[in-house]
Length: 434
Length: 46
Image (cartoon, rainbow over all chains, first blue to last red; front, side, top):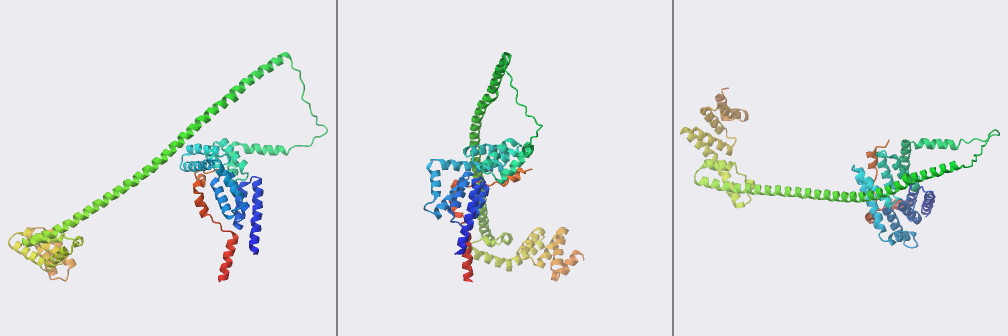
């Protein structure tokens, strides 16, 4: 079909462009072209293999493996990707080392993003030492150096990046900032200006040859002395610093190793602390559930006890206690059908006859001069049938007689406000003094 | 000048070797030919 052929042509063009860019070490540009090539034709084997190679060159081993494995799946025979994969796997431990380098970079990034730049620098230095082509690590290292205003070290890292990937946009941007801060920009501008400032020689210009002088004996002694001094200076300024640097490097390596161990232990500690917190939370939740279950069981037991108490009070004709226990009864907590049947019977008894008997008992107590007992009977009766205005009125009168005007007025007002059409409303008004 | 905190957030972790298998499975290999084939198939169905 035409469009299939057309897509292949476009894919090939992008591949050629990518290859050209890769040849001049514009790796970022090459990656972009090769990805486009594969969007037009996923079977463009050369483009996929080259993309893998570029990823590998940039230190992204895993991304390279992804491309080469896919390439092998799409073209199982005569595929150079087979060789690339073989090369990586042939050397024992190479893949593990490269994988470890990527892990070190990821750890460094985590530390940098979480405010531990010192540890990040140590780990990044280790990553770029293990893989000097690891572009991302170089750039991150340069950024951290720039944040510390150490522009010389940042510039070195960026210079290495631009040697590997000439047009890396991030590296170019950072480099421009580094040059601004080191004054390098001005120097380059001047050099560029001087390069184009040569003028043509004119007839009047004279070239003066260097003058020849013969050395005298004193001159020779002076030259030998100067040579000795220079030699001593070389030892003092070049050889000694080199050995000191070697020692420092060794110490830094040890420091990196210790820092790595501390970092690993910190991570383990954080994981264990998190696990401990989680277990602690679970234990607290379980304790809460257990206490809730115990409380529920206690509530259920108390309901059964209340039923037994009501029955016992009935047997002893102690209606007051029966009503008191009934008021606190919650039938919803009783599961046994036989006990529920007894509760229903008690409820019927209490709501049809019990409240009246309590009213009668109250009136009898009042007539017998026991005003406190009368008030208690009336209140229990109202707990069973709360809208009984006759009992409300009697209770109000009882309080009035007792001298508790506030409580008496409260009950009279309740009748007047909430039951204005009841028989007792008028009596309540009179009692209230309206 | 660069805002260090903001800039460092833009950095993404690199793909690790252990994640290669998962990355291959999740790779979107659709190319233009697949898309056009799909479009032609839909047109024929309509």
